[in-house]
Amino acid sequence: MNLIFDLYGTLIRIHTDEDTKDLWHKLSLFYGYHNAVYKPEELRKKYLKHKKELLKVSHKKDEYPDLPINPVFERLFIDKGVKENVKELSVEAARLFRLCSTEYIELYPHVHEGLKMLKDAGYHLYLLSNAQAAYTVNEIKMFELDKDFEKIYLSSDYGYCKPDIRFYRELMKDQNIKPEECMMIGNDANTDIQGGRNAGMKTLYVRTDMAEGIPESDYEIEGNDWKKIAQKIIKMNL
Image (cartoon, rainbow, N blue to C red; front, side, top):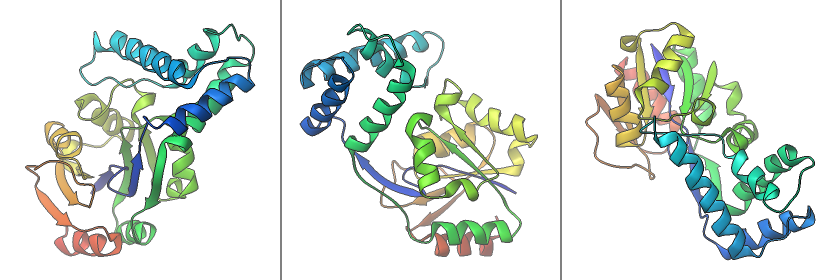
């Protein structure tokens, strides 16, 4: 069986706030240091404008679009006449944005132990996340989750996100596996569970403290401790 995991709210507990004054103050300082001078509120409005325009273009063909966020930060430099090293600077700006907007981020208890138990039991593990590679790749490496999965799939790399059925199919095609050989595991009733069901997969709803919605899942486990969750999965022989 192939177990396909969601990331945020399932394996990682996180809370972000992109509207704090401190975030936009620090980000405006970063831009100012690189000759793109903004007042914090001006920067916030410009960021939202460019982000909306970016998604609007994609919305014409995708119901659930997701695109790399870096071009938005790049555009903010270009608007102020900065032309050199804007791609590199946009990467740093995206990471700073994430850092300053994150109130807390941590693994749920015993994630590594639980995932190892599942691998030792013969399951194949993959990660399928609605996430921006610009900063999620760093967070995955920071928590050493890259060592737990055979492959990781992030929505910003594909142009669409869960529950778009194509995102699930990208993984299955890449791994040469069938829907009936897969189980989608996540905390969100729509993006994880309904999306997985639409893709023909079995589904396991993990009711963590960040659970979203009331799902129609094949299985459900409540709790935040992944050692206990893994034990239940193995015992249920899913």
